[in-house]
Length: 161
Image: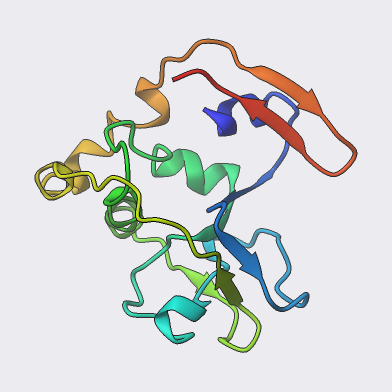
C-alpha cells in the first residue's frame, strides 16, 4: 500500500525497511540498481552472516519495474513470518538476481523487542507462492486512503487495518 501511495509522486526507487533494523555503516547506500537490492545482509542477531542467499528480508531497495514484475508483496501474510520467503519465491520465479553489498557494508543492529505473534498459516500459504504471485500482490490490493504527512526527509503514510 505504501508503494502505491509513494508511486503517485513518480519515485523510481522504493526502500522497504523493517522498523527494528538500524544501519551500522553509512556506506550502505539506500538506492536502486537493475534488480532487487538486499541492503541488510549482515544482521547482528544472525552473527552478521546471511543464512540463505535467497533471503531478501529486512531492508531492500527496488526499482518500479522489478517491483511490479513480481507483483509487490503478498497481501496474505499477517503477523510475523513468511512474507520475506514469499518475496524470495517471487524473485526466483521471475529469474531476478539479488544484489548485495559486502558484509562489512550491509551491517545492521536489530533492536531488541518481544517476539511478534507468529503467522501459523505461513507454510500453507508459501506452498503456492511461485504461482500465486501473479494474482496476489499489487494487482489485488484494496485499501482505505491513508493519512499522509510529508516531511523534508521522509513521507509518513499511516494506514488503518
